[in-house]
Amino acid sequence: MDKINCVFLGTPEITNHTLESLSKDERINLQLVVSMPDRPAGRGKSLKSPDVIIKAKELGIKTIQTENINKSEVFLEFSKNNQIDIMIVFAFAQFLNEKTLEIPKLGCFNIHTSLLPKYRGAAPMQYALFNGDKETGLCIQKMVKKMDAGNIVKEQKINIEDSDNLGTLHDKLKNLAPKVVTSFVDDLINNSVVEKVQDEKDVSFAPSIPKSETLLDFENQTNIEIHNRIRGLSPIPGAFCFLNNKRLKVFESELASDCLKPFEVSLKFNTLVIGTKRGSIRFKLVQQEGKPKRSDYELINGFKSNNTEIKVHSTRIEK
Image (cartoon, rainbow, N blue to C red; front, top):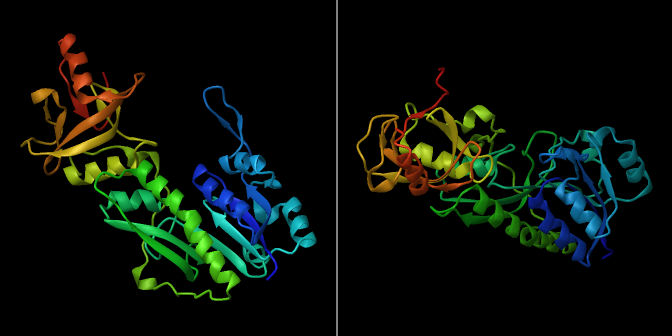
């Protein structure tokens, strides 16, 4: 069989391992990488290319950057002048219209970081952690116009450990993706792709997380819910509350046994324990506004040296 002509669509760093794997696969002719335009980043707000564009240029692969692939004259011209067999899409952050989906001969295939039809949408890893799931995985689905609703052509499960957070789960799935894609390419080469229809009655959604959802609510959330939200938002962007009227981001926590009311604080044994709707929780690794990350022990020692009382809130208190 001739090489498979492939176009890769992606944006963030999680896609890089898969891109590099495809570039080294002798069965694949990686023709093009498509991503978003450069964006301002960092304190200086200088323009930065998407991670996948940086990697593609390192690998010597042709690139196109566009706000809308469906309207990109450069991409449309490329597709007219080149036979595209498949397009592989991974965290691309753009919808493909029907005309674009019809461009590749064999179809467009999306890599999704959940076990579809569970958690369709932009934040499947976060929601798996929010809900305390014990397993998740990676799916490749043949794309249709409806979001994440296409037939599944390859999937693999992994366990979610109690110690996992968004960062560790991200890395597990980043490392798994090239293996799953390689297995899918095997099926393409052997003409043995099997499509599994998603069961619509099992559909759930994982939409993008607004900033308001990163705020911890000790009055309406239990210690387990707060602990899982911290896991799902660590290390980026970080769940937060207010401590002595300053924003406090929380990156690590554990359930505690103290009997405390919502917002009530205990500092015994130099640990920062807070009451919730039900149960209490210890904040183990935190970051105050304008300060580096540090343990609760270090945080408490700083307050004790200044004889300052510690109060926790879910909003800033007007002075």
